[in-house]
Image (tube, rainbow, N blue to C red; front, side, top):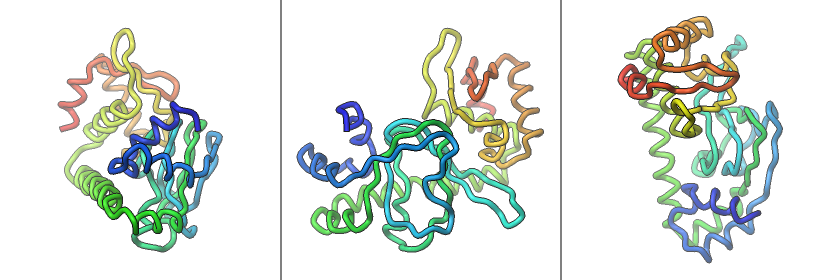
Length: 228
């Protein structure tokens, strides 16, 4: 992996407790993976045998109900990790991981990781901390579904996406989220029509400007207040 890739990988929770020498040793056990937009890395129900770190691009994690409806649980970007749950609780994958843009990852098999954790228990603590943070976010999302209206959830999703993928532009923060309107609605947990209505309202107020699979946040403070 190139040096810049190493820098991204080192920011992941897996490497938080490692010095440079230990990190380099662990990286030699990792395998690169490349996905085009729309390619599935693993399906819900498949046996989990590896964790992954995103080097570049975006991965959506979601699941499909028995009647075909889809729900997105998260959209992850560079340095974020996923797939580690089955390390601590072996069993089928609970979500499907799909690339929403051209994406590069590195994967580490659980067998290799378990032997590593036996010698370095401090790494287990960083992984458990990462799982705890994810559980907190899940609990918060469940509360939002009950107590927050759709416009508030849309505003919160835009603010969250800006933290991951936003970059300064001339008149605000450009968020190239790479999501379709349907995927954005699935992330918020509402119908596409309702989410589009909220986005149009925010645009009319001058808070955002919509672009193709992207949005410019013109007044992020207003969005932040609407999300609360």
